Length: 109
Image 1 (cartoon, rainbow, N blue to C red):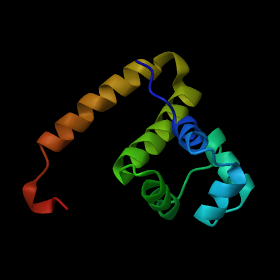
Image 2 (cartoon, rainbow, N blue to C red):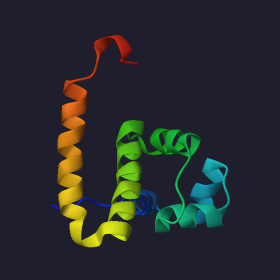
Image 3 (cartoon, rainbow, N blue to C red):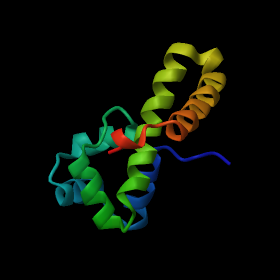
C-alpha cells in the first residue's frame, strides 16, 4: 500500500472539512503561501503548526510528525541515491532496530 505524503494528507484533511488554504492558514496563524508550500512539500511545518493541525483535525501529533519527517528522509535519500534508495532505507530500518535494542538504559531519555 502506498503511503500518502504529508502535504497530500494535509490537503485531504483541509478539503474534507471544506476549508480553503486561506481559512486554514488563518486558523494556524500563518500566511497562505506558507501553507501552500507545506502542502506541496517544499516547506516543513514547525512543531507549533503540527500541534495546531493535530488539535484542529483530531489527529495525534506523532502521526503527523512521522508523516512529515519520513517525507524529508525519503526526499533526501531519493535525491542523492535514487538507485540505492530502497536498500538504504531497508538497512536504515535494521539499524534503527539494532540501536534501540542495544541502547544503554542509563542514557535513555
